Image (cartoon, rainbow, N blue to C red; front, side, top):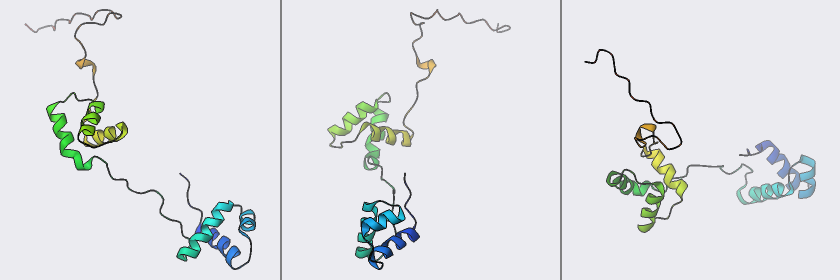
Length: 141
């Protein structure tokens, strides 16, 4: 993400246009910035009296925060619920959210889990050799 240019440069450019009588295009060429940048800086100065940049970025609230209880209840009722299934259930309740928003919320709440090898089928797959028998532990008698 780009950073805002310094206030010193902004002030010099605006001064050159407002007080120095330089055209916006001339100021842009002289200071090495874009013409549209000079136009917006001068407009900002005329409207607000300041050349300081506006806030960049910010906090974006979680879309599903208001439906936290519903999501937790769905996972309590159906632990193997998929994210697509949860997205569909939310849409039935009138909440339209993207798959990414559902994933971010579930992950942030700690409701997601990763499958492990212990949860797979007990027989060996067709294309792999059969599992070796379990060796007896010496002295277990």
